Length: 367
Image (cartoon, rainbow, N blue to C red; front, side, top):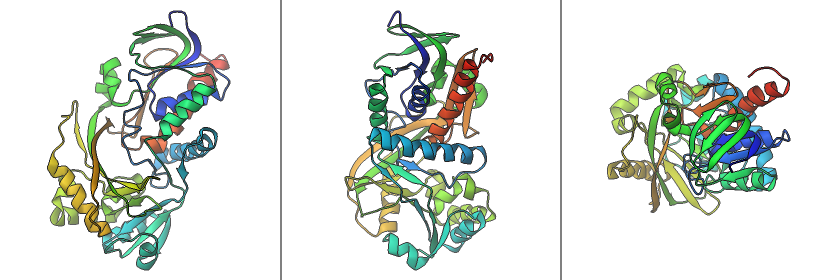
């Protein structure tokens, strides 16, 4: 690698980094991707695989729309599984149904229409968010990486980024010269740019998830607690009522910051979750109570025993905004999704960064 020269160097092989590489490759540019692990194993594989396009608001909604198209294109080209069934939001109380009505997104469903689609208890109505997608997070990213490698992108696995300056990416295996460098390392941004992370308020968010026996879900499922998290619903008056009620009826949901949702993979396992704990550093030790609460909530929703097959912890970047794009020096961008919507907006962010950094460079404008 000592004499490697590319148009674009990317640090990080998560969805954002892969999206940057894909956008550059499609522009006919040479690309090198540096990844310190031997495989893709971060937040991009430890999630629901849910592309929650419809539930976003503001700038995130625009990025999600771009990302949605990018997911469809990459699925066709890289050959990974993509479900186009949308999302089913299950309302089990009147305030949850009111939040769906006030948000005005998706198609409202009656209780019967909900239970005809998914066997759940207690539904009083719901909504279908038709634009949403689902992938298998344990295979999608690796399929994209294989596709990019086949198109000439060079991956440097087990290689750490040591520092970045204009035109140069210094790594543990040598230096890569590049017209543009994009750093997309998620919560590890503070290892290369600690001041940037501190100024942007970026910390780590650890989450607990479970894989359980499936129930035949053909669509991702969100619940009332999900409505407190996504921009399209969280700003409604009804969301305030939901939070107040949960504080009385299910304080553990707010205490553990739970998004009760589920997605089912092609192999029949179902992912349920998830809890959230934030800090500059997060303990690697999972509390069994967290898993017990998640398991109990899922059993109560689906009225099934749901044998646990796996438990795991995910970690992603968290901050006051949906994402942070920064320019540490000329020709360099850092891009970090700072909420749990990396799969939803990451490919859109990547396209924006490449358009800003690479396209302006090609037109001769100083970036």
